[in-house]
Image (cartoon, rainbow, N blue to C red):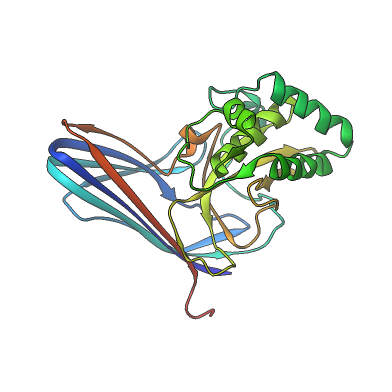
Amino acid sequence: MRLDIHHATRYAYSEPQRRLVQLLRMTPTSFAAQHVVDWHIEVDCDARFKRHTDGYGNIMTMLYIDGPVEEIEIAVSGEVLTDDRSGMIEDAPEPLPREAFRRSTELTRADEAIRQFARDVRESETDPLKRMHVLMSRLLNEIAFEPTLDAVERDAATAFGASRGVCQDHAHIFCSAARAMGVPARYISGHLYRRDGAELQEASHAWAEAHLPDIGWVGFDPANGISPDDAYVRLACGLDYRDAAPVAGQRLGGGDEALTVEVRVTQAQAEQ
């Protein structure tokens, strides 16, 4: 599938800011399931750009903006050609060994409830791939997906106890339970083309990947109950949301900050 992606992030400040630094993990890499045809990052003010690759293999763009700044807009757009590989990740940058993704974090630490949940999943299925599909389907059934919640940095145990969450919560719980079973798992941020025709979205998407014997990394989206197909564009990976968040930053100045995000994912016109 040929997908057009437009992601706009707007900041407005109640007082002029003296300096802004923005970290963007918003540039996808090409691998077997996706080929980046074209990609641009634009800012509506003077900014210095610095691009590099982080320890997870994610493409990072640093923006340095000198003030006074009262508002800014960061516009990211591009075209990606995707292929349905049933969630299998092939030929992607892999600078870290898979064992690194067994490590727990503050956002993915398993409590006793998640550990018991993981034990039940492990005992229900012996095949490693089928076991991860069982984990995904049980999360879909037990954790209600509520996209209007504002809790992207809520930890897995809290979301699991509440039995509801956003896609970031599902990804954190999946990673937490998989790691409790000894399976390397990582958090993924990206974009999702909505086949129901909902082009305009309020945020990017999130899912997880698990490393399985004789297969390698495979994606699982517990919020939708499927492995990523050609409707998914993979941006960044990490141990949790903080490692793969599309945007993070710091500012030098007082006052309040108002943030709005608009994401539009459509099929390319030629393909339609």
